[in-house]
Image (cartoon, rainbow, N blue to C red; front, side):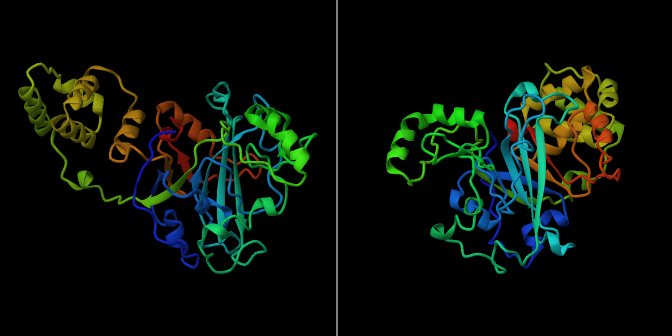
Length: 360
């Protein structure tokens, strides 16, 4: 995964102020990765938002089954992609609230208009519950891993999901499936197994070359100031836009832009202004102007590019009950098809989206 960001981290979490934990309750937020956060801070006890590694389960019992975490296309186990800690201040039963997302690592299972290789789970708890203290936890490395799901059941050493299958020889290692047992065997357990059998009772070592997991990083949400300086400026008239295009062409005689074609292709006054501004500031922007004037662009994709231009490292867009930022006109049709819940038939509300930057 690329796009690691060193954005300013949120202040220490205060569980009594849900707004500080989940700024997305009130505004659009962007999510950025911070790979420098120590891994112990991403344990269940500290209610993290994160990408990769093992899931930091919120409810520590009754984890999703192997069948629930299976790709519907290839039948292989899904890999943990990310989790977002998103409390709901309007519901006592959702004082603690985490969304978990799993994906299939086989690219052949990623098909248009299909969610076979995706799965999202929501987990919620009251503030007073059997697992965690009522007050915020003390942040200390030595106290980080308990309570955790491993205190309540066996976990697969490869993916961190429920592991109800044991290595038949050493009886010390748990797996969720035969495929993960095979992965572990190839990661060195073939040699380790005999040692564990002889030592009887010692735990297995952590899988150091576990390629099934995505790289782990903290995920921080930052509110967006939706008062865009560019949008607050007065709009340009068509004559003013033509004058600005002339300045660009005068600046570089090699550039040829048909004014009317450019205006028709852009279809948006603000978009014209942004493209012109970028062309003046960045030589590559001139090429964008020429392409915009001479080719038929997917307007939805153009808007997508504009929206992410200032924060290219964003990996999550969180906008509860807002609208998704679609990246193509084709996605508009898919978005409309996803509006109704197949179970209760009620209208679904958008909450967050994973950006392409996370998966690159």
